[in-house]
Image 1 (cartoon, rainbow, N blue to C red):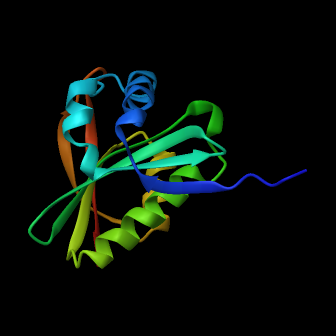
Image 2: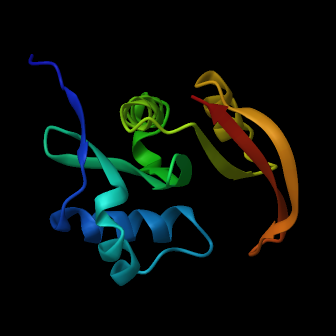
Image 3: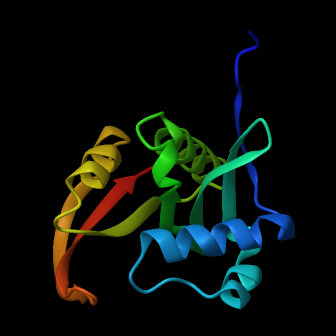
Length: 145
């Protein structure tokens, strides 16, 4: 039986519907597809044998990076998809010579916090009532590159 190979690549216009569906499945305030289309150059996609698994969004201004979103198909979690997306995102940030990457994560999202910590992100602050639906604080985390 052939082994499946996960690929991390630049997102394309063909990925927009899948990213939109994943946004709606994973987030209480999802990005609309027209917004996704405008940010396409900032998105990485994970796929395996043609199946869309997840995506990550990294934006930058000057030498400052921001992980704006990361989502994995719920049926594909706990298989290393988010880890692979994070690894490639950090690699690309280093290649762009960014100084650091910041992100916000729900204070209750212990799995995501552990993933980010695994990749070297450290908590540097808290944003009170940052999230809505439900209202919750965000932990601000930074990776110095």
